Length: 134
Image (cartoon, rainbow, N blue to C red; front, side):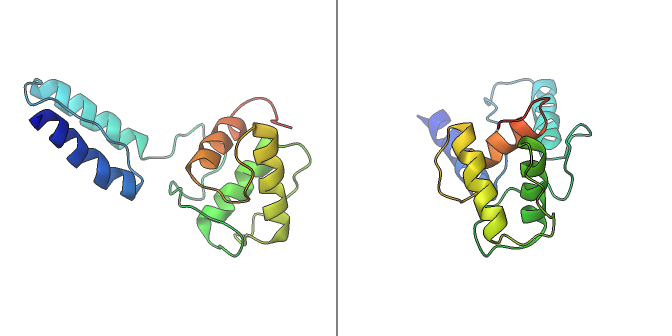
């Protein structure tokens, strides 16, 4: 029961902060803990192979949002879909909204025009792949 509480106590704050949860049993050797901690730090940094590098943050964004996360999404949309041709201006307007909905439809995920966790995950996958989603 104590282990379950420890895991939950680690996961909940990280989930709200957008981080990666890594649970380490109390009996784990320190070398394993250090390796897992290093892996968790690596996950939070952009990979050199990522095609878009405006930000590593993945907040929920939607029509009316602006900033670096919107630029990141626009970049991913341009690389995930043929003929997207979005200006990477950081403004989530009608053109970005339409492109987001088109992407969500092609990817087979919820079509709501909101870029949340599910859409970010699909965008990263398709933008960094060798093919277009549509």
